[in-house]
Length: 81
Image 1: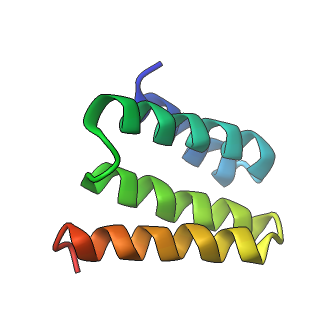
Image 2: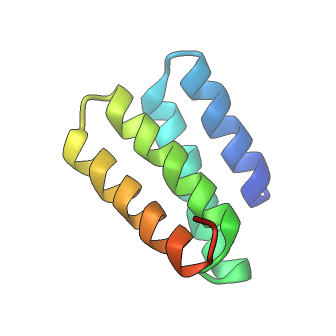
């Protein structure tokens, strides 16, 4: 699957209330994106923000905060914020 397809599936499972399934798709999307475009791109920011939402839904606040912080740092570096 492509990174966008993995990302879409991750969001789909999150909407279905299945964060564990969502997590695996979003993690794969991030890995695919990093391998193809490198880490520093706008898609990675979006994927990390979704990953934070999944962790939050699962009650894993520290992981959610790590993903949110990583997304924020990357967004600032890319001039998105």
